[in-house]
Image (cartoon, rainbow, N blue to C red; front, side, top):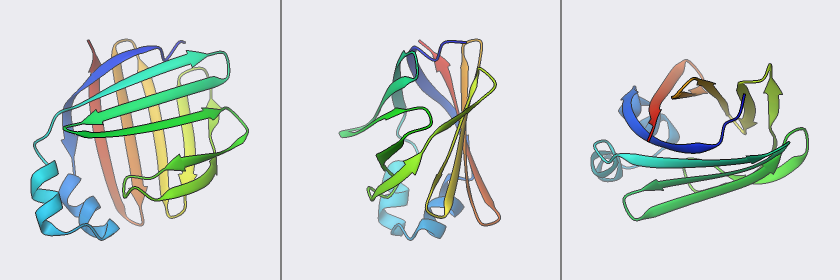
Length: 127
């Protein structure tokens, strides 16, 4: 299944507890909790470019499945990680203490990030 497309954030669960656990300030959490983001995924075989635009912040991660890449974490930290594909619709990686799972089903992309016992889920729809 192809991940190609633009997706708009529809809903998120556990944003505040997850961001607190990451060490973000209450001010940054308050600013970020209601901002809708747009994710654009470009897939060319095993190569991916993921661009997430949230307000004025743009995060770009480029990687090849199974190869080490430098990825930006939700805190802005650069982390070396390997992204693996499970089946044909799920991307899994570990960004230090965060496990990230991105799954596409039809026009819906679900991204779940897990830190300890806190699970943060973002659901986006193709636009």
